[in-house]
Image 1 (cartoon, rainbow, N blue to C red):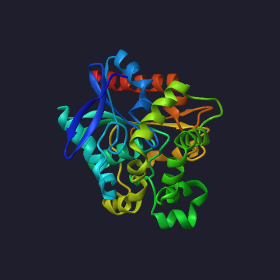
Image 2: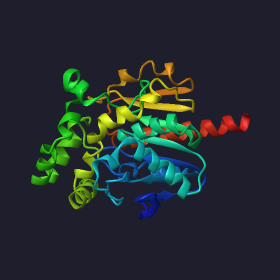
Image 3: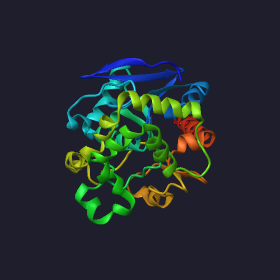
Image 4: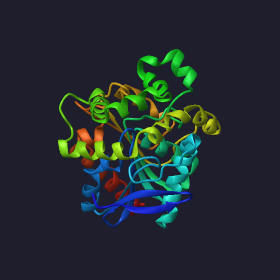
Length: 294
């Protein structure tokens, strides 16, 4: 991707990667990823006539790393997205998210619906609560088999393991929830390794240390509908968020399109870039055609 520009948003600088011109499409990454996770989508969207905008979440990559743990609560992440749109003088944009980026996208759709033109989520479904996870206590008592990592990430053990051997930790993190075949080259992996070695993993882990704050902050949005056109892209081999979790989302999203990519694990846009690009562009072109007809 092109070199990033530092865009001031409130009290943080966000590392923003842009390519192309046309209708804006904002892409938001997850953990432990970077805007670089959209390296296959940004040029494809630009070539298709869209303004592709990917940014590093606060705490990641080239973006600022505030020290307070609470600076990474979901309301701050949504504020960064809205602030970025303001800084780029964009009233609305299609928002595409993966993993934590999907949580930000769902939350923006219910907290700031005038700013979201349409929404695409990869892997993370919407079940009437935008904060993504239940409370830590609920996870610890009922869901350790699937979401135990959320509890572990709130302690210090993960940071210690990462510091001891960053490459081993990252390789295990990516391989553990991927389909069997490799999905990045050694050179691509080196981008992640070098970036996380330089910036550390404390700030990114702070996303998980705000789980309970996020639940409290989003209580008012419980069971809220998502009123914008939406596409859910699930992956049939994601061991954490299987495609079956995406069933029944029509209850909250009247304008919903659901797609399932086969033989794909959790890192969907990197494992199956061609399929994701095709689906994104088809969804965006369908939206444009509908607006012309109306």
